[in-house]
Length: 396
Image 1 (tube, rainbow, N blue to C red):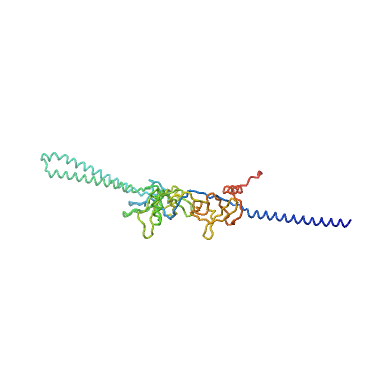
Image 2 (spheres, helix red, strand yellow; image 1 turned 60 degrees about the horizontal axis):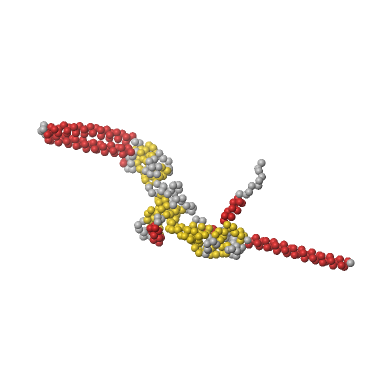
């Protein structure tokens, strides 16, 4: 009886050990499977390869210049009594800028007008003498020589009156030079002479300030000789337009139009000068500033584009990762072209509708199975993380 019980107990013990071993192996296998699965199926954001009409640009370095630039000069001698602007201010056509003491010129005008009035009276008397003695000379009551003298006096009086009138005009002109106004809408620089100083001394003009026009504005740039045939060809088809790009890659809000192409090539540089005119309503560019000019040649249809962040570079080559229908990542070398906004032109290597990975290119390996999400889904997820749902609890 005891022998039988011993055998049963031994069998039960062995069975328990087997069950424990099997459970342990099963658990280890499940853990490893879950770990491998989580490792291989990483989530990536994908975007489809699209076909769009892409503008073709030529890039140059340009210099901005004002369309109009005027030096404000003192044209008469006198003391500066007023400055009616702030240094660097925007002014409108007709705005008062400077005033030279007008009193000496007002006095000169009064004197000139008085002299004119006096000489007009003398002219009137001389004419009356001619009229009175005309009938007398016809009757031989006076000699012809005497009458001719009266004619000469009247002629001289007329000449004096004309000279007086010219002096009045000059006096008015000198008086007008005492007040200086803005000749056009623009921006004035700093004052070069302070109020109280004598200006225009010795009849020489004194520079007081400079005003430049800002809107619109010119941009000059030089085009390489090899680009000239295509530019002239496109110009004969339609007006050429361009964009201005700043050093931080931001873009000027207004596009410009080419309004001048030089008539000869600079033989020393092998370039030709082009000029464009561009609006500057916001006054964000000023003369003398260097900018990048993107000259639009044409628009190329049916061009393949992908998001710029989908294109990687490795040892001088460009590549993308394409996710197939089996959700496996495929490494693919491509020929990348120019950038177009946030997109990159792909000249060779992909097809329309294929999905390319746009993030985590350094973590992906060829053949790895991935989970995909669109850029819109990724953006929504990030927004949800940044704005957590309310807990429903109210603050006391």
